[in-house]
Length: 317
Image 1 (tube, rainbow, N blue to C red):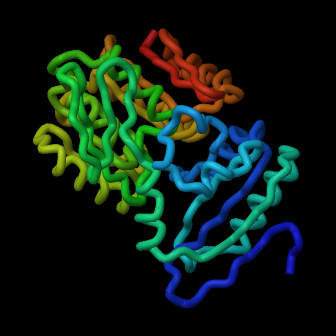
Image 2 (image 1 turned 180 degrees about the vertical axis):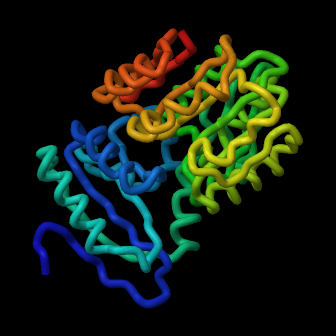
Image 3 (image 1 turned 90 degrees about the vertical axis):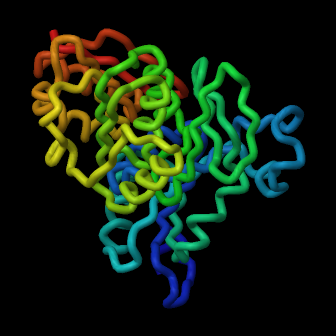
């Protein structure tokens, strides 16, 4: 057996393969960028911010409280019949190229276990000035000045806990105005489109290339009781509704390379006052994305950063 990774044994009932890489905490952003090249939906385990004195107390499992806070892990899940060898080879090659000191493990996961095991640790999250993301199964008494967004992300990215999502939601609070049209490209759980609608957008169109994400987003939209938000399958801008005119706000919480691929075509969906909220960008790649926007006739008018992640607000020049 290859000694560079651990392969756990699993039975024939497993439906997914988990690829997990554990690295020193300071390399978390690097490995997140690598794993996002395999899948847009990452599971990140980083316990370094848990405050044993003030955070949750006995609501957190003891194994998490005692976890090694000098390391972090990033996992992606692929269908069990996908090419394990090819994916493993890609990860190992990128680790070597970037000099990332990572431990790789590969294991099988039953869909039910994957979909439900994390729920015990997903709690209400306040974002920005007004938004509170609340798990669909949690009881929550909302203050009068808060907008509650209830989410069950299932197997789609978007709980509100990741920096990239929080950055965009904070920018939505700043840039959404009553009556606007909003487009969310790579919507995951539908969280950004739902937030935009709660903040006053008149119409929100959400798209994702993953049918599972679209199914999850539609369920969250329905459970939110919103009739001005729709979600469909689309590969970036292919298939996006262009009949209703320009979008006032376009959200793209994906990764740097995909934002770069989208940039030459996004202008046709905008007017002179439209903004793009581009996130999912590690700070080291921000200049590449900014350069691409500049070459395609856009200018960065605002920027937000958190823990090594960057979000850009972009308008036509």
